Image (cartoon, rainbow, N blue to C red; front, top):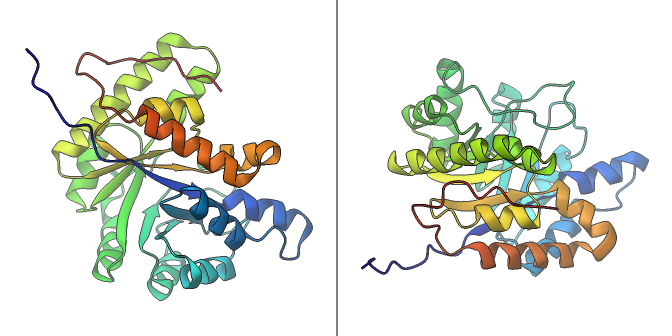
Length: 267
């Protein structure tokens, strides 16, 4: 007889508002305002707000970060590159959390996970400075054991698993590739949890894939942005967040140990 296990705690939903700022910046001015979008998202069920301040300021600006930090009623998660400029801004602004991500000027969006294993000496002082300032650090990485172990050695309290490859394989109908990527996500989440890391996930999630990954008990937070901003064109931002919250809550019951490769997850 299987022992009864309580379901994992309610998974947190972080809403990335970068592309509200992208739309604003396409024309200039202040509309649509990312701070207003954040307020709508929180009212609809978001647990925290994510904003990526890029070196080229292509969407979120310094003023956006300052206003979000001053006015949000939920934690602010500032995505940032591990550069002296961004570290100085984070230490001044004091967001609740900072997620270190790789950044290239030529990319449309974050294309891969942070190379933690090969950049220990670069990342260590940034992680330490943020932590010493009371900012909770996470590292955006691929679900690779060497990267996860490197994150643990840096003493970062959390990682965010880059699930884009799994989402893309599903969207393109590459079933075997999707199954392989899903196994990597499961194994990575379990390994990180065993090392004492808090596990988040993000990049490319939609309602269906978020519902699936919400069933992984080691994962405690999903960060989602582009898809929901796109859905907002059709149903409104509040409704898109409510639908995401409902999908995650429905999918939250823990996966059985035998559930290794649920490859379904349409748009």
